[in-house]
Length: 137
Image 1 (cartoon, rainbow, N blue to C red):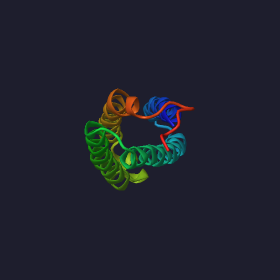
Image 2: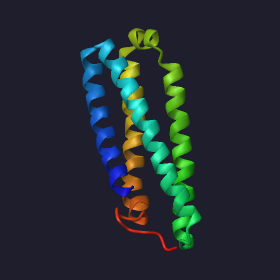
Image 3: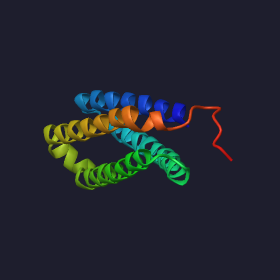
Image 4: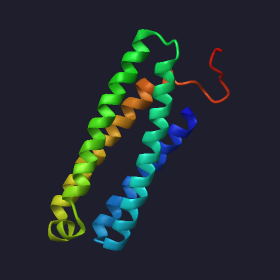
């Protein structure tokens, strides 16, 4: 699981970088395609991460680990709500009308996700079992 989450983060970073490049070219069809690609990976990643955190909550982990899991959950919900609002606000017509504003909004949201992924890699991922580790029965 830990390895898959790290791979997801790498893929999300790549998609975000490529998205900004498409945005700078003002390539609306590419932007729409990448927006869908990002959304699908983001949702899949959130589901995998949520499953890992829920498994951690159900296990007999030290209190600090449970606190980390709870902090993570609150932060991810907040970020997901921001992302949902972003999608509602920035329709294709609105993007066409305000490229600079959309680019700023994208960069701000991407920075928030980059910060969240860095936090997860530093605080959450070390608590997750490595591939091949088995939970105590």
